[in-house]
Image (cartoon, rainbow, N blue to C red; front, side, top):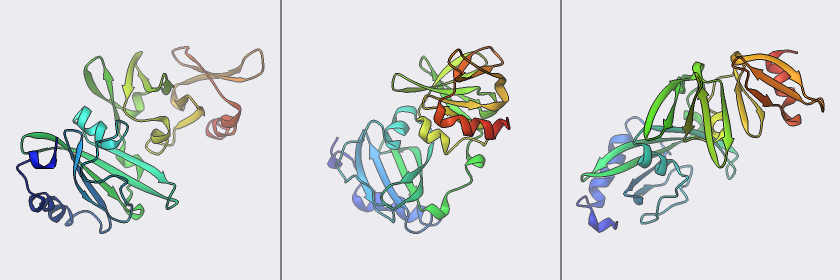
Length: 223
C-alpha cells in the first residue's frame, strides 16, 4: 500500500504527534505502520532505522502489533547508544485500515519491569489467552519460536527469551540458552550421569542447567 492510498494527509498524521507530546517525554520516536508499510516517522533521541514507505520487518514490534492486534511492550539494550530503550506498540485504525502506533521512549522513562508484566499473552491454535505470570512454570526456545507452559498447557509467545529477561519478575531465572524457569515450580535439583545439574519441576518435567547459568540458579535458590 502506498502513502497516497490513504485519505489522511501528512498534516493529519502529524496530529498523532501533537496529541502524544502531552504525555510522552520529549525526544521519543514515533512511527505509524499501515498494512505492513510505514506511513509516518518522527525520529527522536533513538533514531528509527526505517523510513516512510519501508515495509515492516516481520520480527519488529510493529509486525507483532499488526498480527496480534494487542499492545506490545519491549525493553531492550541499544548497542548504538549503550543505553536501554523502551518500545510500546498500540493497535489503532487509520482510515479504516488496521495500523500500529509505535513509540520509543528515552531510557529515563522506562517503567519498572515488574509493574509492566502481570501476564503474558500466549497463542493456542488461533486463540490468544492472557496468562498470569505466576502461573507460568517456564519458557522454552524451540524451532525459532518461544513457548511457555501453564497448568500443563503449551502456548506460543511473541517475545524472545532475551526480551523476556527484561520483562519478567526476579523469580524467573535463565538456566539455559533455551530455558527461563519460574523457581516456584522447582521440585528438586539433581544431577545426571555426567554430573550436570537437572531441574525437576513439580509436574516432573526435567530441564537442563547449562554451565554458564549455574551461578545464577545457585544464587536464586541459595544452594
